Image (cartoon, rainbow, N blue to C red; front, side, top):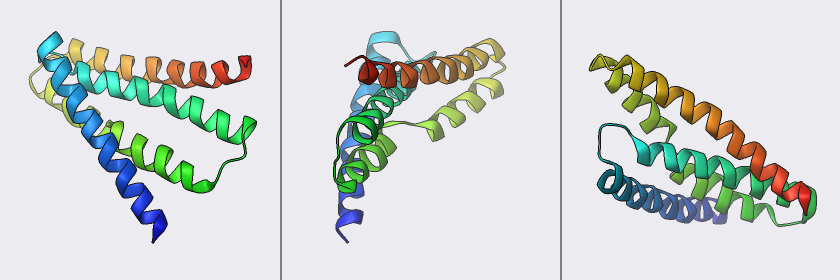
Length: 124
């Protein structure tokens, strides 16, 4: 039961963070491109790389922390379901170039951010 509570609490915090970030990005950058989704995906990729490298290579932590942070918070924060929907909407609107940018940036920059998070841990 504790596992479910940890995932739910982390997920709630992550989802709230995603919502606030998406609203902020829409005000800051407009709504033509899903910048909020890109932001949370890249930041989430960086955090999971950093967190998992620290907790598997540097520190011995309770698996409960992984449930709270990696499964709950990051599961609620990152939005690949939103990513796929928004990309399909761009394609439906015949905005193939924006859809291509959305897919490419989320994947390439996301992988880079994960690698960077792991690399930061290995430096220290």
